[in-house]
Length: 448
Figure 1 (cartoon, rainbow, N blue to C red):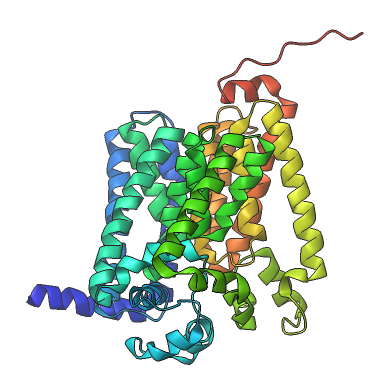
Figure 2 (cartoon, rainbow, N blue to C red; figure 1 turned 90 degrees about the vertical axis):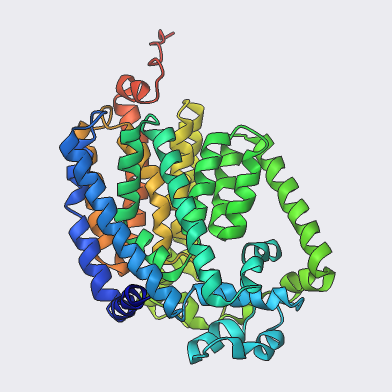
């Protein structure tokens, strides 16, 4: 008991040092990236490099454990407390889109002015079926719910590492070790643990769709990714470009089934409220301009001082032009890549694109970039600069993302450019690019 109390007290102290601790640990992890990449360029890696990887996992794991202990002992204001409260309202059979019901039960939370503005006065932020993710939590005490949430989160992190290794690193033990170390080294991963967020679940959906993209069940992963974080809907762009009609149909069927289940459990009135009185319209203007919002829209609004209260922020003309141009470029590159047989590139390009154009992208959403990062690593021998070029690129990306929360947008932009550059490299060196995707280079065609 004394040991447990001491750990909780230490964790509470660390909670007060949130930003400086995160800065220190994340910055110290940057030099480990090239060490790990170079050490794992051949599989199996040496015993020494395996020890370094395990050391990184243990150090970061211990840091994450301290964060978890702190949050369980003293649930923070954001974000898990909000998720738990959403489930708490729903568990009592109330309309979770009606702010009046949130006000009635607000005593369950230690209220702050920010919580009142962003939660109590708004209601549930997500589509109706998403409530099933948080409903079980609402039947539990918030601390017990936090423990359950973290247990599930740890399991999802393990699944993420296994799938990352299987899809991009040959599925070996060394691949799993590298995938786990790189995932934990990302600042957005640490922030996901700190806030009790759902980003590891989104990564899992991305990876499952990557595996099942040609199947009907691939649509289930699109649907679930979209319900967990609406940014997941960007996968539909790839599905259309690549003509994955089975996945598109699967998405519609799963969304319809979950919507029917939501209506059956919570009633039509609650379901319809989301569409008739959408909570997004009640969100305060700060949601679009706070520094943790690292979307393209939020950055434009901060730089231009745009008056969000004057008109819809999404209709900002600068954003419309830039997002439209980026969307057209993504669609063109993705379609060209798909028609050339590089399906992975077409899919990978949509991930940073979604992070850039989704108006609600927060800094910790960039954990999704682990997917295109490892795709690039898997092609290291065929890209310009070879091994050294890819190691330099990924090290720079980790440095950008880990150095400062406010640089997440830059990291997302650089990720998009990096994936797009793979297509350019394919045009410059088709034989090398063909080897990278395990295909034969196209035969030379005679001119007429």
